[in-house]
Amino acid sequence: MSREIFDKYVGDLRTKQKFNKQSGKWELANPWAAKKSPEWFEDCWNKIKVSGLTFDGKHITLNENGVSFDYVAYKNKMLLAYPESKIDDGLVYKGDVFSFSKENGVVSYSHQMADPFGHKEEDIIGGYCIIKNKRGEFITTLSRDEINKARRVAKTQTIWQSWFAEMCKKTIIKKAVKFHFDDIYSEMEDEDNKNYDLDKSLPPADELPEAVINAINAAEDMKTLTAIFNREYKNFKTAAMKEQFTKCCTIRKLELKGQGNANS
Image 1: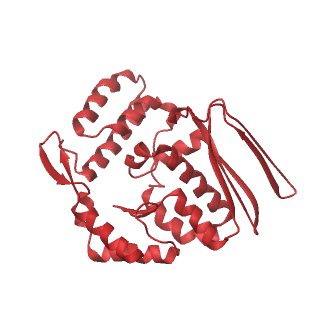
Image 2: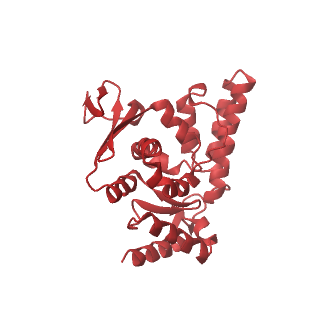
């Protein structure tokens, strides 16, 4: 059944169309998929099989880099290896009170939310992941700056723009399993890491205003990106800042080309 879901998913991926309001024409929603060979998709399927997880097209998906696993898939992999596992994760927002301790191998933690119904992405200050099973009890934390570092080396910003909180959680659990369960996640991590350019040198988030970075990442066509560049470039006073800003714009330009929006 999983293979049938995969084959239908691939078919939809290669043929799905979207309407371009600017050109007034229908175009492929995923132009990269039409360029991939049957052998490439078969290789992706084999890597999913090796993971032991069930393909559903939601928590395990494909993109131009290969297979992508979301944070739920990472949890499911842990439960596959250690069914008794207790996994808890959360994002900490401004105003929340979060504390933890580990004594004699036992993890204790507390997360008091200031406003559980008023969460805003810009208010995220970090997050945590707690894993407890027969191998022990482990807690991993990540600050907003560390999450931003992971975002900056992502090869595409589209999923970060659409699912920022979910990508924060994935980043945290990726760090947790890398530190404590690398033996069961190594192949899965090797494949998922194709979605990141780990050797790419990008400007630190705290050196460019976050509003500017968000505007660049949200640009859906070259016209918008060019307008951002022309508006903001003159505001940076140092050569280093101008260079960093230009790098961010260049990266987004390459992403738009990959999405088929370079001439929009």
